[in-house]
Length: 291
Ligand code: C2E
Ligand code: MG
Ligand code: MG
Ligand code: MG
Image (cartoon, rainbow, N blue to C red; front, side):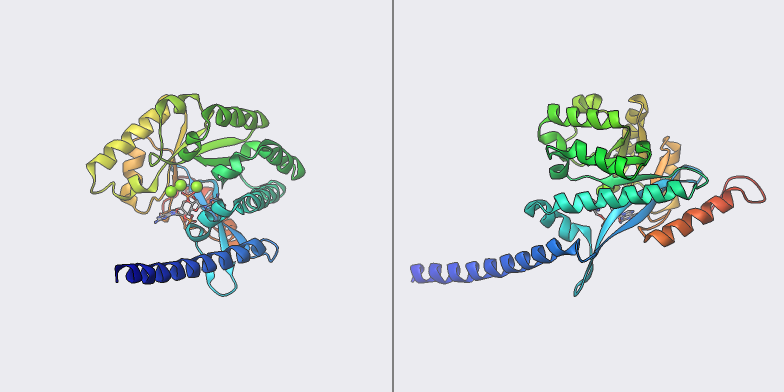
């Protein structure tokens, strides 16, 4: 009896797994075609300074699936990582972001906007990642200082010396680095000192509970103070309320991103938002703009 039960269980389980695998394979195939079919899009989420002036944006990929509608990145980036598709997606994102930087450069905006691009660990660890970035920057003839690569602490688990070497070469090209989701992964302060970073990005999870959680307050204060001492910029992600923003400002945070400032939006809407903020900047009272 036990044996047959075991057999049934096995059957049931393996069918479920096959179904799951089948779904996954289907999604993977569709994702494989997504670039060619032009189903991927970049959305832009504004980053501002303490006076609400636009500094630039983070580019966030979106997949407009023919049947499922908009698939959030958390549902397909891990799949893309696993299957290796992240390499072509990542390259598409980089290329599209640089084309956008070029368009802004040609439009001679009131100020240069930076564009932050997420780089996955697999993408970063490709043998030719440095030359990919160099080629894209040269092909679009953009100012590399306006391209900011967002990496995560998970990279540190791979091979710290190789990571430092690649970052150093990329820094020599002129691009910037931000350490995304800071504080949620493997943070070794020893490495933090050695990485040629420009910015720390305080993770959303610390910002979220500022109002209620005193340890999050303490952690954020410490991250900001540490960034200042290490001569790094610091940006807070996931800023949703005025209360969070003023706490962060009081602690010395200088850059802000989150729904309070704007959700990730398509390029036309983003450019409209920047225009509005710039118009207000040179407005009649000539002073600071408040929402
Ligand atoms: P991330 O890089 O940490 O991006 C920030 C995420 O927080 C974005 O989610 C953004 O929409 C969301 N967010 C921003 N402000 C707020 C806020 O005030 N409240 C809340 N609740 N959320 C906020 P999104 O666009 O769904 O992206 C999720 C993650 O997917 C990203 O996290 C990043 O790790 C990954 N991702 C997105 N685009 C790319 C890409 O082009 N390449 C790679 N490798 N990963 C990407
Ligand atoms: Mg990011
Ligand atoms: Mg982040
Ligand atoms: Mg995050």
